[in-house]
Amino acid sequence: MPVHPSTDKKGIPHGLWTKCKKCEQIIFNKDLEENLKVCPKCGYYFRLGARERINQLIEDKTFTEHDADMIPGDPLSFPDYAKRSRAYSIKEAVVTGEGKLGGFGVMIAVMDFEFMGGSMGSVVGEKITRACEKAIAKKLPFIIVSSSGGARMQEGIFSLMQMAKTSAALARLADEGLPFISIPTDPTTGGVTASFAMLGDVIVSEPRALIGFAGPRVIEQTIRQQLPEGFQLSEFLVQHGMVDIVVERKEMKNTLIKLLTFFSAA
Ligand SMILES: [Zn+2]
Image (cartoon, rainbow, N blue to C red; front, side, top):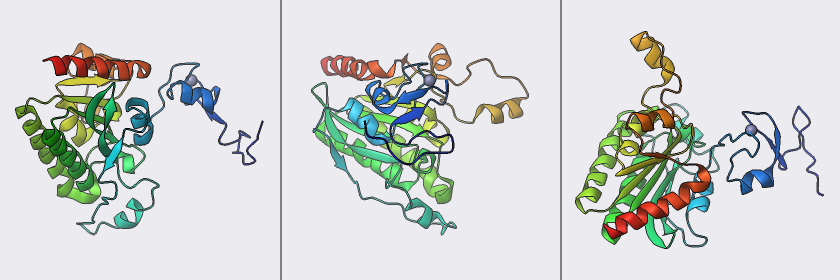
């Protein structure tokens, strides 16, 4: 068995094993991948990058990416923004494109929390709007998987405008009678929750995903009350009508196929 030479402080070799953030057990990376990045020992959900999510949902070799090279401007000349936003291995906080899901053609946008906390700046808003417009032109259902800390402060008002822009595009999709399935994942907060993530015809989430506008600490300080157990987690939101379905990651694709079948018949 090949052994990767580099180790971290605790002597765990990189590349072969991952330590679960919840149960702290050591998991063989291959087992973690096969279990769709859910801890096989305690069921903890690791966050997925946009590519990983697309690979889990979209049929092999059917994905065509759109607007892959779009990078953000720096409208406010925000200190270090231009430099910082180019330092990532991915170009922006969303990947958009089209592909097949259970034989259905779909337009899909998947956010990536790794890129500046999945924040929504002008590129995220523009790519999602273009994907929505392509869905209208091609009469395809639209799926957005969100994961975001909210609007990107480095773009100020230009970030906030994306909330209106994406919402308006989704309203046109709805006018055409095309379905929009929103999948807010852990965590989805701020301006993304306050715009497209909550506009789905159906809103599907994963277990114990944090979804909200402001964080629990801010709310507690504002209303001076203790929040109930599990507040803002997906299961709580289903009980209170903000999310329609919570499904395990291994059931996500099947659930989407069922929804797409339902919508195609309607
Ligand atoms: Zn675990």
